[in-house]
Length: 126
Image (tube, rainbow, N blue to C red; front, side, top):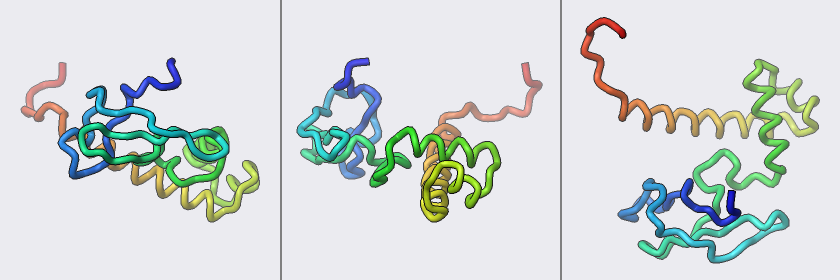
């Protein structure tokens, strides 16, 4: 995938007419920042700037993406907070914070997807 392929992203400004709509072509990379050169995105519609990680559990974390994924994989497998912290090498408070963020993100995604689910007509399942 092209490193500047922005089709998966959408404007994070809730006041923007293009908020939440992917693939509009309204986003550009206006800068890169930090030691991992994260992309700072710019919305041409509302002029807002935001991190490519905004709206995800990875936003405002300083851990490498692989370590965050490792933490969440252990939690998904049922490991406890303290055990996950020991196995991955992070503080238990970090495990709790990432778990809460991922849970909130999953809840928002679920609610959005359920809103588009077909209505149950009560008929037989085919």
